[in-house]
Amino acid sequence: MSIPIQVSPATNDLSLSIDQTLAEVVKVTIPKSGVVPKVDVYFMADTTSSMAPAIAAVKSGMVDILNRTQALGSDVWFGVGNYKDFPAPAVGRHPYVFPHPCTLSANLPDVIAAVDPWTITAGFDLSASPF
Image (cartoon, rainbow, N blue to C red; front, side, top):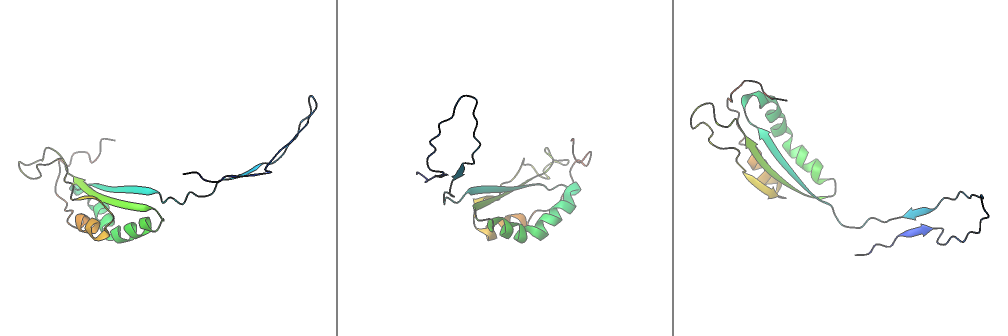
C-alpha cells in the first residue's frame, strides 16, 4: 500500500555561492494510513492473599477498563490469566503454574467472566515480592 506524502514547497531550485547559506522551512505531511492498530491486552494477576486489594480494584473497575481501552479506536483483544505460589504451600491447593481461562478475545463478556472467579488464597506469605 502506498500513501501519498505531500512536500511543500514541491520543488526547490537553489543556486548558492560558496559559503552562502539559506534557511528554509520544508513541510512534509504524511497522512494517517487508515489502518486500525491491533492491540492485545493480557490481564495476569497474582491471586495470593497479599494481592487482595489489587484484585478487588481490578474486578470492580474491569468494565470501565475494558470500555476505555476499546474506545481508543484500536482493534483491541483481551486475555486473562492468574498465578499463585508454585509449588503450593499445601499439597493440592493450587497445582498449576497459571490457568489461562480466557484466550485473546474481543468479546468483553468472556473477559469479564474470566476475571470474576479470581479468588484469593494463601501463598507462602513470605515476602510479597523479591523486587
